[in-house]
Image (cartoon, rainbow, N blue to C red; front, side):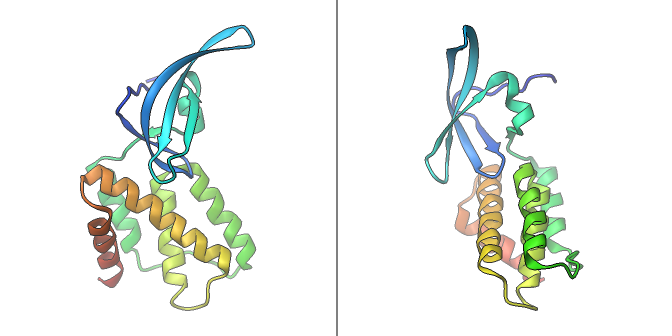
Length: 164
């Protein structure tokens, strides 16, 4: 599959921004060359982003995950072992930021799990608390869309994983 294809009305995931709705496909002329763009509306912020159709995969635009991947995300979240070494918070923060930018829900789930577990043993920095919220938001949004359930219900389901 060389080029991902989305059509208006499809839901997709844009790295670090989260779930987006494909609201249209436009053709624009840029430096004398016609290019097609996906017009995305980020569900969370209502921000609009245009992604060249030819570069969609390159920028990490992807489809909403399926049931099998959802189970894998839940398994990542359930893991009790946290892989946070004794590095400074700003180095840890940069590492977490890289994972979030990949757009992979598995990486985002690792960030959320590690920060969630870490906050029970130490006070998180302001940046880490914001990142914990960001990671949680990205996970809840995508999983609630994937499972067609409310975000509140999905949030409760995720909370239960940490209580188990």
